[in-house]
Image (cartoon, rainbow, N blue to C red; front, side, top):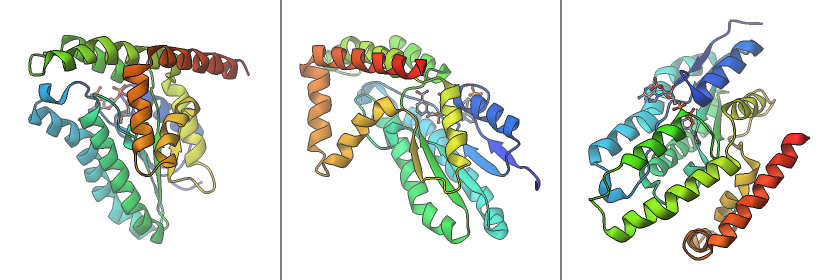
Length: 254
Ligand SMILES: NC(=O)c1ccc[n+]([C@@H]2O[C@H](COP(=O)([O-])OP(=O)(O)OC[C@H]3O[C@@H](n4cnc5c(N)ncnc54)[C@H](OP(=O)(O)O)[C@@H]3O)[C@@H](O)[C@H]2O)c1
């Protein structure tokens, strides 16, 4: 085996830690995993432009800086694999996740554009797209949301955020949330495949949501579906989560 070089950003906790631990065990070679990231939720009117810039600095410019630094060497070696922890929110926006989702869309656009040039130099690119994962990330984001000053927005929006979005979000994490180890396991599996995909969604239970986007290029179908799930059919939302939870338990037993 040749010299190993594995670089994982943001590996003090969560997915990054689990990925680094798995990569260390497997003695794999030459992966650059851009994982560091932060979250942000809430009504747009309550978020400062500085906070948005900080988030982009970590989630997007962190990636741009890392790749800019490593690309020349990878090109010279004609090898390497850029692995990026994106999110299903890099494919599809979600209520009250406007800025976070925008940063992950930026990540997706950046990698999709670069991947063609990288391919010319035999460099691989993979975007890992987890759905909800139970980590510090979720805890921090929800903790900040509970304390958030909502005086910058109107009462109706504040109520939707507090009484609809936050309880739904907690239910989604407890029903569909993966562990960081599950995400790490899938990450290793796809990046060590003979022909790694450009994109990999780690959460099968979340896939019906992202499939809506591809099913209707006008954007109407996912928009209507999310709207109805959130504002019109509370019982449908809860029943769907119940079924998904059962499916997940079933899959876990196998
Ligand atoms: N959890 C989810 O539901 C979920 C879903 C989809 C995608 N993701 C993505 O997965 C990645 C990892 O998230 P996680 O859930 O594992 O969260 P996490 O446990 O909070 O870990 C985030 C990591 O990023 C590091 N980090 C944050 N800001 C940084 C900065 N400015 N410079 C360097 N490192 C920084 C943190 O280090 P410190 O603690 O030292 O700051 C930590 O090691 C993120 O890109 C996130 O967007 C998470």
